[in-house]
Image 1 (tube, rainbow, N blue to C red):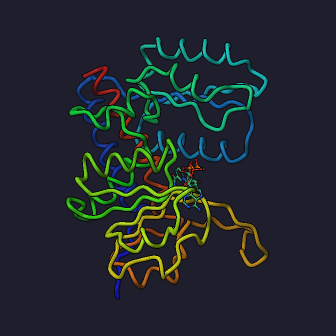
Image 2: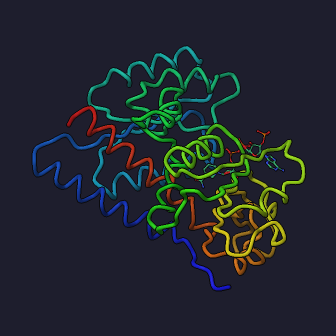
Length: 291
Ligand code: NAP
């Protein structure tokens, strides 16, 4: 079967162009330019790379941004106080606290401290719950990016059987809710305790995988003509890779792609969409606070 590669890099670039135009319009009208703040605790290398990419993206669309760095020895109390300060800073429209955090800091307490109308990662309970309300607020960035990819490739979800593998708070669980509410799909959620995973994945019209186990989804687990969205990103090391490592998804791409109608590559599929969603959320937060 010939399949269509879902090009997340291109869609993300299109979204950034659209955002740049809106920022230019806001500027011309004398309205507030979106301002994203990024809180980074510690010096984890991967987090630094993610944050650098976010800063680069802010610059490319004309957003203002502020980097706020803290040593990994900062107490939870101090970090919560700082979050309160940003919550009350009228100049900041949206902010994120880059994960992971040091083990002595509770991710739940930090997330719940963030004002929901500034929560551009879409992680707070308020924004999470709004997925199933009539008025969805700021959507969790990765699932939002996936829904946007499906929409922009005109992939019909209504009445389809969507199988989501992985049920985490940031990826699988909100994605399942968005597919049900906004996509009107019939959704099956699989996780670590699912027995005979293939018996579910084989019945998927749309298979979405967010686990972090390279090669988990093999060709015999995919229905002919299915749409496959691979969210997993794992850094795999080996001498065969020019850089000594490569990013791999959860799907055995080479074997699975020929069976599909649409499939995301890794890298270059869902990854670039997460930052595009963060920018869309920041623009939305600005529009809500400074219409
Ligand atoms: P996570 O919190 O570790 O969640 C993984 C989920 O997969 C959990 O629900 C887990 O079940 C489930 N699981 C584990 N083993 C399984 C198995 N054998 N079969 C079926 N389900 C299984 O990870 P995450 O944060 O959601 O991230 C998942 C992957 O997506 C990672 O590779 C991550 O790097 C990637 N990711 C990529 C982006 C992006 O921008 N591209 C964004 C977010 C995440 P239990 O809950 O029962 O343990």
